[in-house]
Image (cartoon, rainbow, N blue to C red; front, side, top):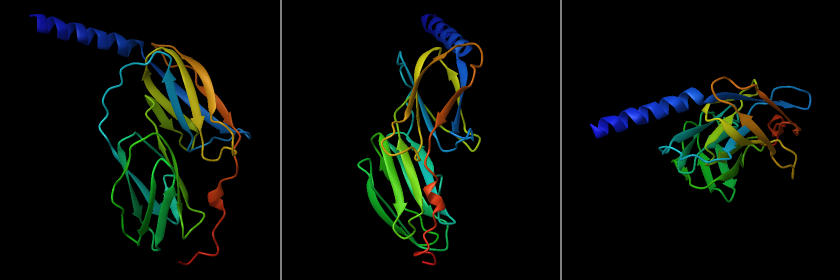
Amino acid sequence: MRWLLGVVIASMLLAVQAASAGDLSIRVQDDARRPVGDAVATLEPDVPAAAPHMPSASRIVDQKNETFVPYVQVLRPGDTVVFRNSDATRHHVYSFSPVKSFELVLAPGERSAALTLDKPGIAAVGCNIHDHMLAYLYVSDAPNIGVSGPDGVIGFASLPPGRYTLHVWHPQLHPGQAELTQVIQVAGNAPNPPVSVTLSLLPDPRMRMDREHMGY
């Protein structure tokens, strides 16, 4: 009977936690109040909770129309990434980042072996043949992390109530500009008011076409 009592108590605790959890939306915009996609937000609670074990995942970064898709890929330490070439042209994918250094030559239709990202950090990825091709691998062990879509919104569900530190990063932040940091309070039992943040960003470098190498 003791084990049954333990199961009942554990179930009640989980139910209380679920009932008190809150949802939160982060809305990212630029200086002109336009929604910003591909922004990464992390939420760090003041009182850390035991994080559930997350099995490692495999992510895909595709190459379509001489563009990395997605522009920003979020991973956890231990996750793997595979680069796929869906173009009709050859790509030379590389990164010299301390997070992960690699060089891959991918013919049309090829995909790379899985690369393991085993430590937090940001790896900038480029193509030696097409200079306008850029992507970023954002590796984080933060308990809550998300990427904004074209609408600029990042949603977090079932957050335990309490105080959190919000960090927002984007690959087009000005050189030397730190990521945005803000302390927010999350209430339980109901959706929280959306949090709006404004980022001052450089123009998208992917818009500058590499005329010298087009046709390779």
